[in-house]
Length: 199
Image (cartoon, rainbow, N blue to C red; front, side, top):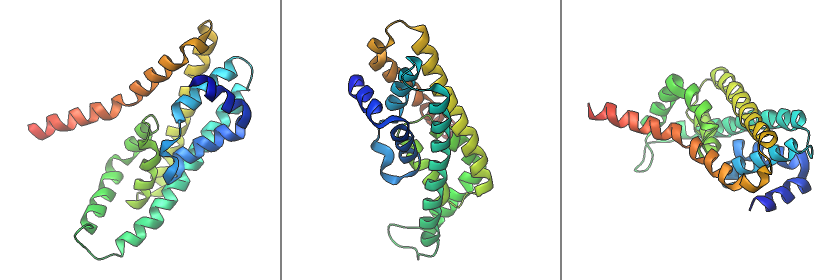
């Protein structure tokens, strides 16, 4: 699998990697794209001097931030239409208003954590826009989360690529570990919420 990703990245280059990061961050259908595995493989290539690490990282951060902003805009346009709809069996305006209040109170943490969670990072900005979260608040957390994820993940990957001899042999287990670690925050949040609910 990782060898296929290496060949794909060599073929599509920087623009292809940035385009996939953008699509996974901001386009509704981007949730199925191999974001974490592709990102780590691209950084591995940078550690082997096949790609430029600074150029790759700068583009990843920008693509992630712009992608989330596009997702927010899409969600906001859909959300405004939902606000004008009448209540029905499958839709209650009250739920949208609750989501809005949730994002106003916890939205920043949600946007940042979602960066590190596959699938969730695609939908978080869309939901934030649909919930009519303040854009000024959204963009500040979006930028911070984009920097933390873009620089953090690529930095760790670049460090491991230079530290571990023949790191390409261990790409699959390393990627599996990254995916596992990335789903820990929502698991902790779920357990924490369940404990509070049972009190």
